[in-house]
Image (cartoon, rainbow, N blue to C red):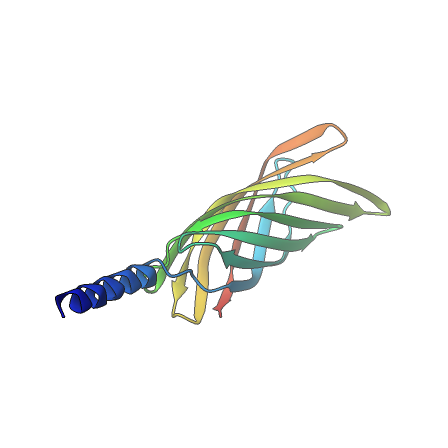
Length: 160
C-alpha cells in the first residue's frame, strides 16, 4: 500500500510539473504600424504576425508588413521570440530576419531585412491589445546597409 501511495504521489507531482511548463497557445496579431527611416521617410501601414511556441517562453514568429507613402515597402521576416505569459501582461522580445521589397514611381528594389525589438501585450487569455511594439529595422540592398530605421506598432492579438 505504501508503494502504491508513493507511486500515486510521484505521478501527481510529475503531472503538476508538466502543467507548469505547458506550452503557450498560438497567437495571431494584426495592427497599424508607423515606420521612420534615417532619410526622413515616414509612412503608415499594416502589420500582421503569427507566433508558435515551442516552450512556455520560447517560440517562433512570422511577421509580414506593408507601408505606403509615395511608394510602398513590404517586409517578410521570421525568427525567434521570447515572451512571458503572466495573467493579463505579456512582454516579449524578438529577432526577425527575412527580406523586403520597395517600389516607387516605377522603380523597385529588394533586399534583406532584419528587425530587433519587442513590446508588451495586455488582455485576456483569448484577446489582447498590443499596447506598443518597437523594432529597430535594418535594410540591406545592393551592398548598401540602411541601419537607422525604426517602426512602432499597435493592434489586436487573438490567442487560440
